[in-house]
Amino acid sequence: MSRLYMIYHSETGHTHVLAELLAEGAQGVKGIEVKLVSADEVDYVEAARADGYAVGSPDYFNYVAGSIKTFFDRILYDERFKGKPYVGFSSHAGGGDVLTCIDSLARTCGLRRVGPGIATPGRPDDDDAVKARQLGQALAEAAKEISAPKAGPRR
Ligand SMILES: Cc1cc2nc3c(=O)[nH]c(=O)nc-3n(C[C@H](O)[C@H](O)[C@H](O)COP(=O)(O)O)c2cc1C
Image 1 (cartoon, rainbow, N blue to C red):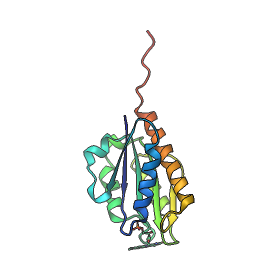
Image 2: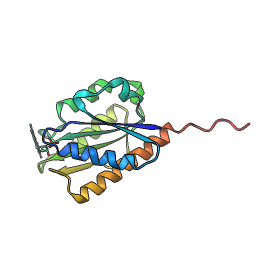
Image 3: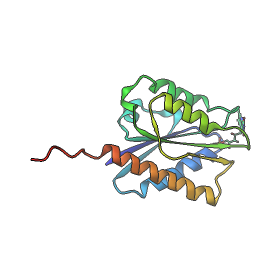
Image 4: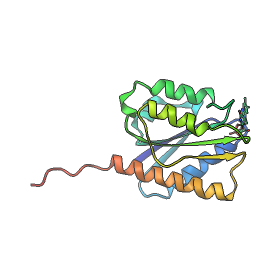
């Protein structure tokens, strides 16, 4: 079983809907377990055991929400997160580029990006839903790859 840890902040529900869509897409992949958590409630022991991450934030003044920044602050020096796949997702009111902020923070923390992420103006529409599910699926497949047992030497 491969594990995904999906962390998000949401006040009015838009980013939360995106998180659920990503989770839906990921759960369509066999052998994937998804944990969806508010960034205020991250269990860092459990997070470190995951094989991949989705990180989502509303655009707050062209930056991520404080709780999402705290997540990256906490994992910066933690070797257990290095090299693992992630995707970013964001909701905004028409401006900013929070995906770039998430990418910059995630890269600095040693995570490996899978796909371009998704950002929606307000609540995701039907097209966004398709893209979000696809992104969740791509993340799940990347997480399965890194958690698959490596082939041993031939005997
Ligand atoms: C404190 C604050 C700052 C915000 N700053 C921006 C901004 O700079 N650019 C923008 O497009 N939207 C901004 N917004 C709007 C939110 O990003 C947008 O409503 C988003 O969809 C909310 O996501 P949520 O429903 O998951 O809470 C801001 C909202 C708040 C509360």
